[in-house]
Image 1 (cartoon, rainbow, N blue to C red):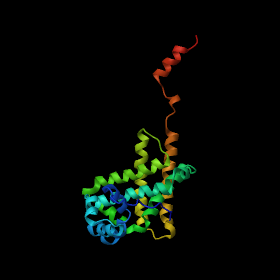
Image 2 (image 1 turned 30 degrees about the vertical axis):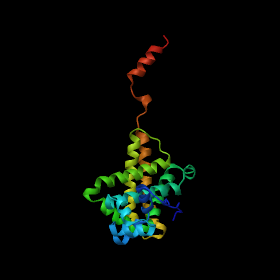
Image 3 (image 1 turned 90 degrees about the horizontal axis):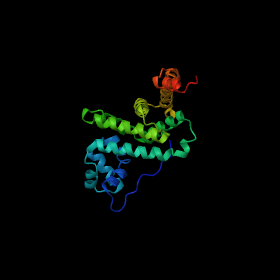
Image 4 (image 1 turned 135 degrees about the horizontal axis):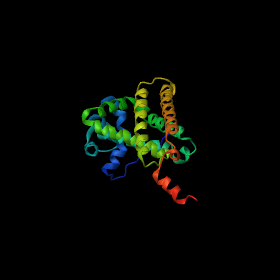
Length: 226
């Protein structure tokens, strides 16, 4: 598994955001047994040294809020595991593969909590939030990978990666192979398919020099030597 940076340490008089950040990576340890519940939150609060009442106030948005905060903690650990200088030495395909696996490696000790989290986010009342969290994960990965697209590609890249990540996560949840070899193989196949599609799309993209352009024609007529 990847080595990760320590999570935030609470100040003597923490803000609610700081309490959320400190509790976020601890709650899933207990959610695996107690679900994403007040019991899991209270156990995490006791472990971190936060009054249960403060913890409940920090997570007034309930289980979905706890999951949201955990996924944000995974974002932070992913960035710490794969800093820009390390990613810069990789090709884009390797960057995306490494980023997806860094997220899964971080969640690996809490797979049962992840399974329960996905079930909660799949509820109709949480569907919109689940979509936002999926988008946020894909956006974070593309940002770290160095993507600077601002046109429609910005959105298609994130939508595509979000689908790949979601599918890979489902394989990961039931993967009993050594070092998650089956998950890695599945991810590699999915990314290979995307790369082939992008290559084909590039080959089929019309050549602007071969497309009739009235403006270009008028320009050529204007400067034609007679």
